[in-house]
Amino acid sequence: MTLYADLQVTRGSFALSVDLTVEPGEVVALLGPNGAGKTTALRAIAGLLALDGGRIALDTSVWDEPPRIFRTPDRRPIGVVFQDYLLFNHLSCLENVAFGLRARGVEKQTARAEAARWLETVGLSEYARTRPRALSGGQAQRVALARALATDPELLLLDEPLAALDASTTLHVRAELGQHLRRFEGRTLLVTHDPLDAMVLADRLVIIENGQVVQEGKPTEVAHRPRTNYVAQLVGLNLYRGTAAGTTVTLADNATITLAEPATGPVHVAFPPTAVSLYTTAPSGSPRNTWPAVVTGIEQHAHTVRVRLNASPTGPADLLADITPAAVADLHLTPGQTLQTTLKATEVHTYPV
Amino acid sequence: MLLLPALIGLAFLLVPLIGLLAKAPWSTLPAKLHSADVWQALRLSLVCATSATALCLVLGVPLAWLLARGGLPGRSLIRAFVTVPLVLPPVVGGVALLLVLGRRGLVGQYLDSWFGISLPFTTAGVIVAEAFVAMPFLVISVEGALRAADPRYEEAAATLGAGRWTTFRRVTLPSIAPGIVAGTVLCWARALGEFGATITFAGNFPGRTTTMPLAVYLALETDPDVAVVLSLVLLLVSVVVLASLRERWISGLQ
Image 1 (spheres, rainbow over the protein chains, first blue to last red):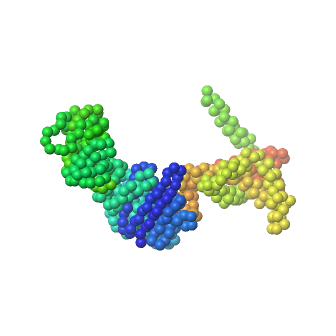
Image 2: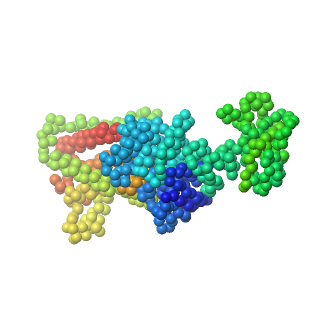
Image 3: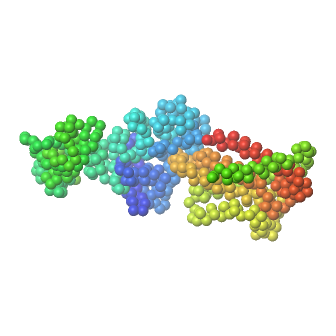
């Protein structure tokens, strides 16, 4: 039983047009920048927003097909974990988890026993009587997950489940969430703007920009072969489009990149910023890609320094290089400075557009 | 510069109450309290104010919900109509009720001929008059609470399988409980003190429609000491109810 969603929503000048499928047991991440339409898509699938066109169906059961069919959220077999969890503060954690079962007509004692079992699963048995506001962010997220899963939904929807947590707990909570998602036999759709959450938790990524799907695939595939600048930025690669002939790719602005392996036709060219080296004078020796470039920006990352360069007209106009802090000192790096850049041809990947 | 008018303002509010206490006929108080009229009027007042408040709750909370969440067209106009009884002189309200619900009124004639119900000059009429005047206090208070409550909690309830009624009962109502309590107290206090609409619509029949405020006013003409005693009782009841509700609800929910 596959979930099919062909989502067409128009809001003023914004139009969402996204095709999605989620298989049982599969975790699909809907990844995109703010304003791409991720939350709109999630709300439409949950029934909190009616479609303007398209169709949402789980196997043969249709949830939304304008203009005739619209099932309200309470009549869809879903569980939702909201970004800020939306736990009911007037109820205890146990009552929060039991809420869905009670609302679906399960008898009180049975619902409470089932809720207690779920709290145990997420390791929060001792918080059964606690009010949600007394919980930490990570605990609240687990209660929200238990509440969403307690009704045994066909589809679990997660809206930025880790965004409300502070950085120190994110790592642990993400790993735990991953375990629960792997155990869940239904379908999971995860909405996030964080590529790391998506890569770690999802089996398949669907990347949307401006309401459209721009790329779809397994995390490793997306990480190695980005197709848009946004995706390249997410996975930390330099990405260009050009036309290959033999071992030379000509970019739109006539700059060229030399390849180790020949290719033909329109291609994407991708390489990591670590493949770019910087020198004050042109190095002698073999690298085939050598461009003079102007430093346009310097950013400190965890253990490396990311340098943004403009290598036009001979090389790419926007080029990222990762170097060590020691190299920054050696080069006396300042914005506006002209350097020599080299790129190892063996680290350059090409794939068809 | 602000302190002096502030103190005068405070005195202006307090001195009449102190005067009431100072002028009370403490020596003859027990005897006057024991007169049957006092208890009759007090009982009637409490019954009518409480019934009117119950009526306001049953009708006013859904009305507030409709105004806050219903997505009605012309909502601000409807809200303006709801608040009319707030600014309308109560006597005018009483006249309007008489014209509509009186025996020959727009609605009253059918109530009379079809069901044999006649509201004017009855205890039920007192309740109707009090509810008419007091309901806006409840509606405005509850609507404010509803608008301040985050509707996304209702969405969360819906995704958990709760229909509209379950959501309202188990999520919306508890989250606006402080607003409902505050509105109920205001509504009840307004109903208890209602005079103009009551005397116009329900008249003055001891035991049936003579509530405390009416009794106070009438006593003032015949026996001012009784008026003072009645006023003290009314004051005491208001203070006790307000204080106990505060203890029980308002502080408990914060």
